[in-house]
Length: 74
Ligand SMILES: [Zn+2]
Image (cartoon, rainbow, N blue to C red; front, top):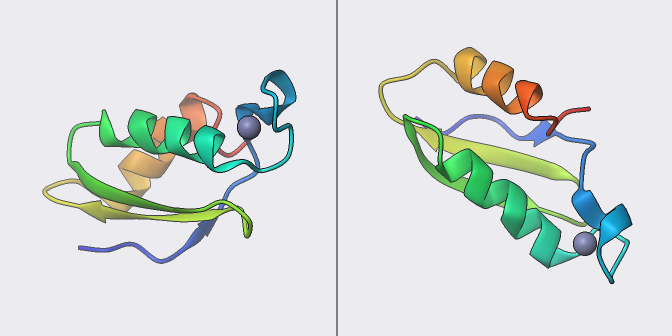
């Protein structure tokens, strides 16, 4: 299943050269999400600060909780 778009607030950009919603930092979050069990794909819309996930065999709520735990939605 594909989740709706979720707004997220965290980007590691304060530590990188771009410092402002750069695609590279979006990719870092994407890779972290893809590392979670059940996450088949992740779409990052960095300028709009939103993301959606393609999940298989897991509840979206569980993945969102896990993402929250690593600070994606701070
Ligand atoms: Zn950045």
